[in-house]
Image (cartoon, rainbow, N blue to C red):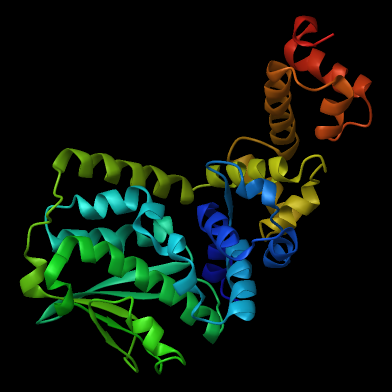
Length: 336
């Protein structure tokens, strides 16, 4: 595997995609367990607002769904490709001054929100295009399924912006029409082409010059600022520390070990230690911090006994938990 692809698999991605997928296809505990098999992620992580997971885990989840439901599964998971799931990217796209500016935003920040793809802006004599390709290895059926979800999101976003003119835009796929293509076509108001040279969204120049019906300079600037704030940590090591904290919290009461954490983020223990050091932290303080904040919350709620809190945090007994609380909060912070 090329270095860039290996790096992309370790990039943190919002757990919101996985949360939506599990809700759509995991109606029972058994179904959810099958969906999450091999991902290294548990349901507890998905239930945490703002949680992140490695791209590799999301790709495995999508592969599990594709094997179970076929490559047209995005048609049954509208929440996954809805514009509302795109956060600041949706806001920045809608509030851009023109359609051309919106396409530029999509090409620039699409991978910030969805690091499993990469985008390239192309300008031809007649149109502006966004070409989309996988940023990580995906076999044929999986990539076609992911590309379908991406295309449905693109269509939903530009249906708002282009309104009745959406029919002049074209989505192009570099493969033959899938079995059940008639179901697929019901979801698009734009033109759709198969057997194209690449996966492309094509918008004629005449439409690109149009002002966005939702143009809002102030809101647009704030959304761009939010996207840039996400983009910057992704280029350094700070994002790794946040992902390790999410994994530690998700595994409780099991105590995540350093070696196990390294495996889940797709690296060696030695590399994990080095990259955390570059972020100015280490694994043990991260673990301690997660335990401290979880203990603080439980103590404030006051609904559990010391034995129950100790068990929830992976302590062998209530005495060990009490010692930790005295270290964190002092004698007054420990509930009698």
